[in-house]
Structures are given as C-alpha cells and as structure tokens.
Length: 70
Image (cartoon, rainbow, N blue to C red; front, top):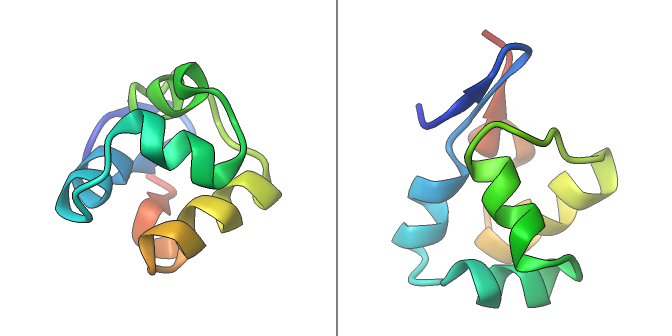
C-alpha cells in the first residue's frame, strides 16, 4: 500500500503510474486540481465518495482497489 492517512490507506500513486497517467492527466479526468491528487496520494486529503468514484472510473478499478481502512 502507498501513503496513508491515519484513517485511510491508499494505493492511488501506484495505480495511477501503472495506468501511465500523470497527476495532471488524472486531475483533468476527475475534474479536480493536480494539488488535490497530490494531497490524496500523500495521505493529506481524504477524497469524497464522488471523487473516489471518479478516480476509480478513470483508472478502471474499484474504490476498494484504491483505498482501504487500516
């Protein structure tokens, strides 16, 4: 698993890179700023359900593939 927030582990950076996307490309597809994607990857920001679903759709995975509870 990648970086983590105390209440959420995430694998976003690894899945984004495996999809061949930059933070900027993912942010455009998910309709958020690149800084938001960076903050999620670094465990600083926990995304809303809607944003998590948008990211999962873009990366062709499930929300559970991206985020897990510790």
